[in-house]
Image (cartoon, rainbow, N blue to C red):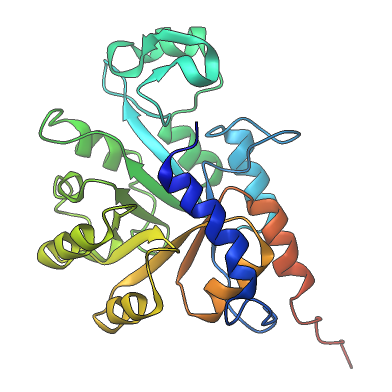
Length: 269
Protein backbone atom coordinates (compact mmCIF):
# COMPACT_ATOMS: atom_id res chain seq x y z
CA UNK A 1 0.00 0.00 0.00
CA UNK A 2 1.46 3.41 -0.97
CA UNK A 3 2.61 5.63 1.87
CA UNK A 4 0.94 9.02 2.50
CA UNK A 5 4.08 10.75 1.22
CA UNK A 6 3.99 8.75 -2.03
CA UNK A 7 0.32 9.52 -2.53
CA UNK A 8 0.97 13.23 -1.93
CA UNK A 9 3.81 13.18 -4.43
CA UNK A 10 1.71 11.44 -7.10
CA UNK A 11 -1.17 13.86 -6.62
CA UNK A 12 1.14 16.88 -6.81
CA UNK A 13 2.68 15.65 -10.05
CA UNK A 14 -0.81 15.55 -11.56
CA UNK A 15 -1.94 18.90 -10.20
CA UNK A 16 1.24 20.74 -11.12
CA UNK A 17 0.28 20.64 -14.82
CA UNK A 18 -2.05 23.54 -13.93
CA UNK A 19 0.48 25.48 -11.84
CA UNK A 20 2.31 28.64 -12.95
CA UNK A 21 5.39 27.77 -14.96
CA UNK A 22 4.23 24.28 -15.90
CA UNK A 23 4.08 25.28 -19.57
CA UNK A 24 7.14 27.52 -19.58
CA UNK A 25 9.71 26.11 -22.05
CA UNK A 26 12.99 24.91 -20.59
CA UNK A 27 14.98 26.59 -23.34
CA UNK A 28 17.80 28.70 -21.96
CA UNK A 29 17.26 27.53 -18.37
CA UNK A 30 19.71 25.46 -16.37
CA UNK A 31 18.22 22.10 -15.39
CA UNK A 32 20.04 19.98 -12.84
CA UNK A 33 18.32 16.63 -12.67
CA UNK A 34 19.26 14.17 -9.92
CA UNK A 35 18.52 10.54 -10.75
CA UNK A 36 17.20 8.89 -7.59
CA UNK A 37 19.14 5.61 -7.30
CA UNK A 38 20.17 5.96 -10.96
CA UNK A 39 18.14 5.07 -14.05
CA UNK A 40 16.09 2.09 -12.92
CA UNK A 41 12.83 0.44 -13.79
CA UNK A 42 11.37 -1.87 -16.46
CA UNK A 43 13.65 -2.11 -19.47
CA UNK A 44 16.44 -0.22 -17.73
CA UNK A 45 18.68 -1.35 -14.88
CA UNK A 46 18.29 -2.35 -11.27
CA UNK A 47 18.48 0.55 -8.85
CA UNK A 48 21.81 1.50 -7.27
CA UNK A 49 23.97 -0.42 -9.72
CA UNK A 50 26.87 0.77 -11.85
CA UNK A 51 24.71 0.15 -14.92
CA UNK A 52 21.95 2.39 -13.56
CA UNK A 53 24.45 5.17 -12.91
CA UNK A 54 26.24 4.76 -16.25
CA UNK A 55 22.94 5.14 -18.10
CA UNK A 56 22.54 8.54 -16.45
CA UNK A 57 26.06 9.65 -17.29
CA UNK A 58 25.64 8.70 -20.94
CA UNK A 59 22.33 10.56 -21.14
CA UNK A 60 23.83 13.74 -19.70
CA UNK A 61 21.93 13.66 -16.40
CA UNK A 62 23.63 16.09 -14.03
CA UNK A 63 23.70 13.91 -10.88
CA UNK A 64 22.86 10.55 -9.38
CA UNK A 65 21.58 10.04 -5.85
CA UNK A 66 22.64 6.89 -4.07
CA UNK A 67 22.92 5.30 -0.63
CA UNK A 68 26.03 4.33 1.30
CA UNK A 69 26.23 1.56 3.90
CA UNK A 70 29.19 -0.10 5.58
CA UNK A 71 29.90 -3.83 5.51
CA UNK A 72 30.96 -5.68 8.66
CA UNK A 73 34.61 -5.28 7.66
CA UNK A 74 34.28 -1.57 6.94
CA UNK A 75 33.80 -1.28 3.17
CA UNK A 76 31.32 1.38 1.94
CA UNK A 77 28.86 -0.20 -0.48
CA UNK A 78 25.92 1.15 -2.46
CA UNK A 79 22.63 -0.16 -1.12
CA UNK A 80 19.46 1.57 0.05
CA UNK A 81 18.07 -1.11 2.34
CA UNK A 82 19.84 -2.54 5.39
CA UNK A 83 19.45 -6.05 3.96
CA UNK A 84 19.18 -7.68 0.53
CA UNK A 85 15.60 -8.92 0.74
CA UNK A 86 13.59 -6.45 -1.36
CA UNK A 87 15.85 -6.43 -4.42
CA UNK A 88 17.66 -9.74 -4.24
CA UNK A 89 15.41 -12.08 -2.25
CA UNK A 90 18.03 -12.48 0.46
CA UNK A 91 16.77 -10.87 3.68
CA UNK A 92 19.30 -13.01 5.53
CA UNK A 93 22.10 -10.91 4.06
CA UNK A 94 22.33 -7.85 6.31
CA UNK A 95 24.91 -5.39 4.96
CA UNK A 96 26.32 -4.46 8.37
CA UNK A 97 26.73 -8.14 9.28
CA UNK A 98 28.38 -9.32 6.05
CA UNK A 99 31.98 -9.02 4.97
CA UNK A 100 32.48 -7.53 1.53
CA UNK A 101 33.79 -10.87 0.27
CA UNK A 102 30.63 -12.70 1.29
CA UNK A 103 28.33 -9.95 0.05
CA UNK A 104 29.94 -9.81 -3.37
CA UNK A 105 30.01 -13.59 -3.67
CA UNK A 106 26.24 -13.78 -3.13
CA UNK A 107 25.13 -10.45 -4.65
CA UNK A 108 27.78 -9.33 -7.16
CA UNK A 109 25.54 -6.53 -8.50
CA UNK A 110 26.03 -4.44 -5.34
CA UNK A 111 28.86 -1.99 -6.09
CA UNK A 112 31.29 -0.44 -3.67
CA UNK A 113 31.57 3.31 -3.29
CA UNK A 114 35.14 3.07 -4.56
CA UNK A 115 33.92 1.43 -7.76
CA UNK A 116 31.33 4.14 -8.30
CA UNK A 117 33.95 6.86 -7.86
CA UNK A 118 36.44 5.04 -10.09
CA UNK A 119 34.00 4.56 -12.96
CA UNK A 120 31.92 7.73 -12.80
CA UNK A 121 33.47 10.20 -10.37
CA UNK A 122 33.87 13.54 -12.09
CA UNK A 123 31.58 12.49 -14.96
CA UNK A 124 28.34 12.78 -13.01
CA UNK A 125 27.73 14.61 -9.74
CA UNK A 126 27.31 12.29 -6.74
CA UNK A 127 24.59 12.89 -4.17
CA UNK A 128 25.59 10.42 -1.45
CA UNK A 129 22.95 9.65 1.15
CA UNK A 130 24.44 8.57 4.47
CA UNK A 131 22.45 5.63 5.78
CA UNK A 132 24.36 5.15 9.04
CA UNK A 133 25.33 7.25 12.05
CA UNK A 134 28.89 8.00 13.07
CA UNK A 135 27.69 7.69 16.64
CA UNK A 136 26.92 3.98 16.19
CA UNK A 137 29.75 3.31 13.75
CA UNK A 138 32.60 5.74 14.45
CA UNK A 139 34.62 4.42 11.50
CA UNK A 140 31.89 5.31 8.99
CA UNK A 141 32.99 8.88 8.08
CA UNK A 142 36.66 8.00 7.54
CA UNK A 143 35.77 4.98 5.41
CA UNK A 144 33.44 7.05 3.21
CA UNK A 145 35.85 9.97 2.83
CA UNK A 146 38.71 7.62 1.93
CA UNK A 147 36.77 6.79 -1.25
CA UNK A 148 36.31 10.47 -2.15
CA UNK A 149 39.87 11.79 -1.95
CA UNK A 150 40.07 12.48 -5.70
CA UNK A 151 36.80 14.43 -5.74
CA UNK A 152 35.98 17.95 -4.62
CA UNK A 153 33.02 18.52 -2.28
CA UNK A 154 30.32 20.78 -3.74
CA UNK A 155 31.90 20.54 -7.21
CA UNK A 156 31.81 16.74 -7.49
CA UNK A 157 29.69 15.50 -4.61
CA UNK A 158 27.31 16.37 -1.78
CA UNK A 159 26.51 14.37 1.35
CA UNK A 160 22.82 13.92 2.18
CA UNK A 161 20.95 12.60 5.17
CA UNK A 162 17.42 12.34 6.51
CA UNK A 163 19.04 12.78 9.95
CA UNK A 164 20.99 16.06 10.08
CA UNK A 165 23.21 14.77 12.89
CA UNK A 166 24.62 12.09 10.56
CA UNK A 167 26.36 14.88 8.65
CA UNK A 168 28.02 16.15 11.81
CA UNK A 169 30.35 13.16 11.70
CA UNK A 170 32.05 14.77 8.67
CA UNK A 171 33.55 18.00 10.10
CA UNK A 172 36.18 18.25 7.35
CA UNK A 173 33.53 18.41 4.64
CA UNK A 174 32.46 22.01 3.89
CA UNK A 175 29.02 22.87 5.26
CA UNK A 176 28.04 23.87 1.73
CA UNK A 177 28.30 20.19 0.73
CA UNK A 178 25.89 19.01 3.47
CA UNK A 179 22.25 18.48 2.47
CA UNK A 180 19.47 17.86 5.00
CA UNK A 181 16.62 15.86 3.49
CA UNK A 182 13.03 16.50 4.57
CA UNK A 183 9.85 14.75 3.65
CA UNK A 184 6.78 15.12 5.86
CA UNK A 185 8.86 16.90 8.54
CA UNK A 186 9.92 19.90 6.45
CA UNK A 187 9.64 22.58 9.13
CA UNK A 188 11.73 20.66 11.66
CA UNK A 189 14.44 19.79 9.15
CA UNK A 190 14.71 23.40 7.98
CA UNK A 191 15.12 24.50 11.61
CA UNK A 192 17.86 21.90 12.21
CA UNK A 193 19.54 22.88 8.95
CA UNK A 194 19.73 26.50 10.08
CA UNK A 195 21.00 25.56 13.55
CA UNK A 196 23.76 23.36 12.16
CA UNK A 197 24.72 25.68 9.30
CA UNK A 198 24.39 23.04 6.61
CA UNK A 199 24.39 24.38 3.08
CA UNK A 200 21.32 22.84 1.48
CA UNK A 201 17.87 21.37 1.98
CA UNK A 202 16.07 18.81 -0.17
CA UNK A 203 12.45 17.78 0.12
CA UNK A 204 9.05 17.27 -1.44
CA UNK A 205 8.15 19.89 -4.03
CA UNK A 206 4.62 19.75 -2.65
CA UNK A 207 5.82 20.88 0.79
CA UNK A 208 8.64 23.24 -0.18
CA UNK A 209 6.46 26.09 -1.34
CA UNK A 210 7.65 29.14 -3.22
CA UNK A 211 8.00 31.24 -0.06
CA UNK A 212 10.07 28.62 1.76
CA UNK A 213 12.22 28.04 -1.30
CA UNK A 214 12.99 31.74 -1.67
CA UNK A 215 13.69 32.16 2.04
CA UNK A 216 16.16 29.29 1.99
CA UNK A 217 17.93 30.59 -1.08
CA UNK A 218 18.01 34.11 0.35
CA UNK A 219 19.82 32.69 3.39
CA UNK A 220 22.47 31.14 1.15
CA UNK A 221 21.04 27.62 1.00
CA UNK A 222 20.65 25.54 -2.11
CA UNK A 223 17.34 23.72 -2.50
CA UNK A 224 16.55 20.38 -4.10
CA UNK A 225 12.98 19.30 -4.77
CA UNK A 226 11.37 16.02 -5.82
CA UNK A 227 10.18 13.62 -6.81
CA UNK A 228 9.22 14.88 -10.24
CA UNK A 229 7.73 12.46 -12.74
CA UNK A 230 5.95 14.67 -15.30
CA UNK A 231 7.02 17.32 -17.77
CA UNK A 232 4.73 19.96 -16.29
CA UNK A 233 6.09 19.39 -12.79
CA UNK A 234 9.65 19.60 -14.09
CA UNK A 235 8.96 22.87 -15.89
CA UNK A 236 7.32 24.28 -12.76
CA UNK A 237 10.30 23.44 -10.55
CA UNK A 238 12.73 24.96 -13.04
CA UNK A 239 10.50 28.02 -13.39
CA UNK A 240 10.41 28.66 -9.65
CA UNK A 241 14.16 28.24 -9.29
CA UNK A 242 14.86 24.91 -7.59
CA UNK A 243 18.61 24.27 -7.69
CA UNK A 244 18.27 20.51 -8.10
CA UNK A 245 15.32 18.36 -9.15
CA UNK A 246 15.19 14.77 -7.93
CA UNK A 247 13.39 12.16 -10.03
CA UNK A 248 12.86 8.45 -10.58
CA UNK A 249 12.38 9.20 -14.30
CA UNK A 250 15.72 10.76 -15.13
CA UNK A 251 16.15 9.47 -18.68
CA UNK A 252 12.70 10.53 -19.88
CA UNK A 253 12.98 13.97 -18.30
CA UNK A 254 16.56 14.45 -19.54
CA UNK A 255 15.28 13.67 -23.03
CA UNK A 256 12.74 16.46 -22.58
CA UNK A 257 15.52 18.82 -21.48
CA UNK A 258 17.52 17.97 -24.60
CA UNK A 259 14.50 18.42 -26.87
CA UNK A 260 13.87 21.90 -25.52
CA UNK A 261 17.51 22.99 -25.53
CA UNK A 262 18.43 25.80 -27.92
CA UNK A 263 19.86 24.59 -31.24
CA UNK A 264 23.63 24.64 -31.55
CA UNK A 265 24.95 27.72 -33.30
CA UNK A 266 25.78 27.09 -36.93
CA UNK A 267 29.52 27.11 -37.57
CA UNK A 268 30.68 29.77 -39.96
CA UNK A 269 34.15 30.43 -41.33
